[in-house]
Image (cartoon, rainbow, N blue to C red; front, side, top):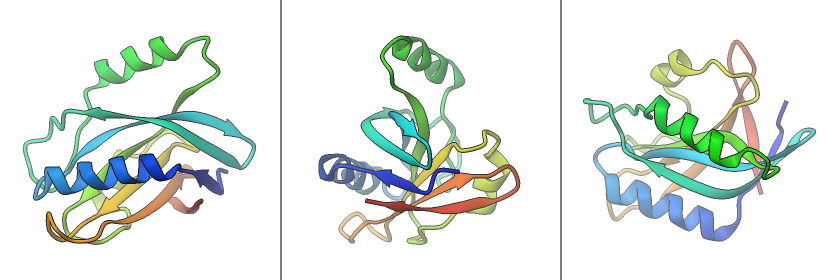
Length: 138
């Protein structure tokens, strides 16, 4: 299982701005990077339109995900996870997140924010097949 995620400060800031900008809706996107044993390293965030109708959920277009996977072929990088915001301020997987998880070792990066001007709290989790395991963000 992935235990740590290296997330550069520039990507942390990009994610925080996306979460604040989408408030009170959820922002979402895909995380490009590499996996090496129990460690992962993010190299780029790919913002995606949130197709969900409700303000408290997110849905990434599967066709956009496949397009990105194809673009990454042969680069040594892949989609290591997704990111989204929680406008309720809780940096933990929601019941909807649990329902939507299916790929083992896929990272779920959550940016919790209570208002457009509030601080953003980041947390990361890896799906282990039955539940989310916390991942340390470096």
